[in-house]
Length: 163
Image (cartoon, one colour):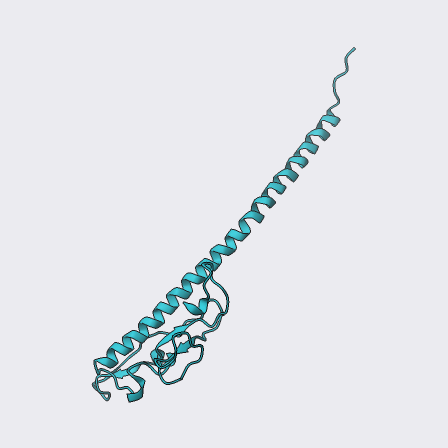
């Protein structure tokens, strides 16, 4: 006389296997997620670095356009400025072109001062023509170059303030 296996014990074994499979699947997902986290952080840093490069390029192009217009005598400048803008705010506010009055119009070189993605503030380091190329203090007379005030190191090993 053979006895058939009981249904209740077979159901318990099937539920146990399903629970074990669920634990294994969760463990595998946890391992994969923890491996992907550093890659995600690196992607975020790389995007912020790209944004920093774009912002620096935009501001430097605005300084160059201002200088070109000053060299062509299209805008009035101070003699000691050598044709460079006095500060970033001047590039946002704009300058009068065409002699002022009714015939002149205002030209803006930047819509706004961008926010430094590395520091989170719209504060930038500035250099004048008279300053040393690696100087971190601005003479305050004219704006020749801008740089990030961040002291962090980029993914390529350089300092953000050297860009």
